[in-house]
Image 1 (cartoon, one colour):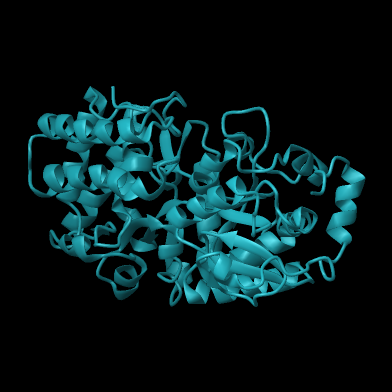
Image 2 (image 1 turned 180 degrees about the vertical axis):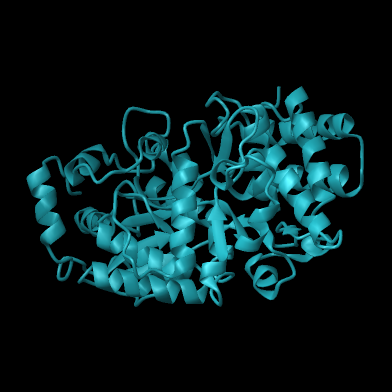
Length: 443
């Protein structure tokens, strides 16, 4: 096992060194890891939860080939099997993958003995401009670094410029409050013959639950789980009920908002950046993208942060370090942005020839992240295959309160009991923005 890099000069050598020739086959075949191999079966194995769809995988393969001159076998997996395989193989002393890629929530639970300490590697990479909050997340509540921040995404507002005339007096599109966001939707509806123009991704595969998890509740309550039944949470759901009265009714069928926005079914929307990117393609100069609103506690936003880690006992740790170094270069980060609309985590001057929508999104995401009152929220972390059950609490609360008109207080009490039952079984610490205490529970 190769010792971690400890000197900047050595790391700079890695950056200039080809991976080629150093990567002997980590596996006799991909069968040792359950997943879909998007590159050949030879070379160092990169095991990841990211870019699993065929088109995304093909584009990322191009990024890898450009960034790394040697052969890397990229194998993708769902988050549940990913964690299980890493734990099983490390416990058996027979790790097959040398490099791991995943969301913070995929990697953080493995920091309890299954990941290699990358503190020296990160130090050797130098000051590439990672945000302090991302570096702190990579420590997973310890003093050591367990993964290197890789790429990021988030959720933003997308709207046609013509709707800006309906903003309430004095509102700044880049610093909207939730009250102003609601007034904007109301004004735009009235100007459209009383037909709503705001759409939200409430379809079966939509990400509307991330709105409550990472934006609405943190902005109103300062938390996601511990404050779920608080007085402020009741106010947040009262607000959401009122907002929904001004939402396009077919929002319950929308999985990706870029289609209804491009088709003119809505002129204002909120969604994951990757699900908005094609909306402005036909008329990019007629669209704006803006940060999500802010509430009484601040501007809650969900950071979709991916990282690169190395499992303990990795067969080719030295090669994995070189790949991490290569994928941390600004040029590789921009290539990933072009390919799959995941944004750099390092400091980089974005090129001027990006698709207009990507440039708009980059500006909105950066304003959101650097807001003085920003409250970072994460998707459920450490819950493994039970993530769907945790998120179902948010979905069921929305269904009962917003769509069915149920009493807010009694609904939150009931759903909090369900949440606490799940968390009692999982015995996991809370994730941002809640305090990292264990076990996590609704107060």
